[in-house]
Image (cartoon, rainbow, N blue to C red):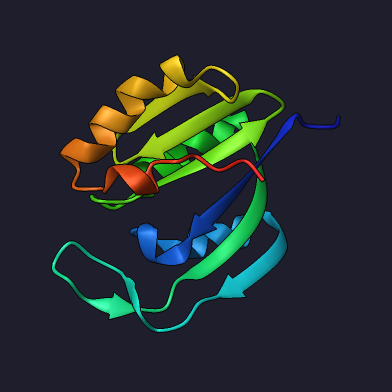
Length: 121
């Protein structure tokens, strides 16, 4: 049986247990420079970014492993799942009105609004 897969990019530093990324097909990895924020205390470091594919049953694994002050998202067609610590939002790529609640929630977690862009490319 072929599973219906969603694509996303997750930063290992955003996860309580980054080893969960080992359970998924990874199509690309990027390690950034050492000057990016890694917590809400001003600590700087590298981001380890993984482009992965997951099925819908995996969303809750990510929801339960997201750290405060971080989010990740998956996309499939026009659909986006924005995943925060203990919260998942359904968004539509072409309808930014569906993003409002997720953006407001992210801001309550201390995420700057300009980072809540839910890029799909």
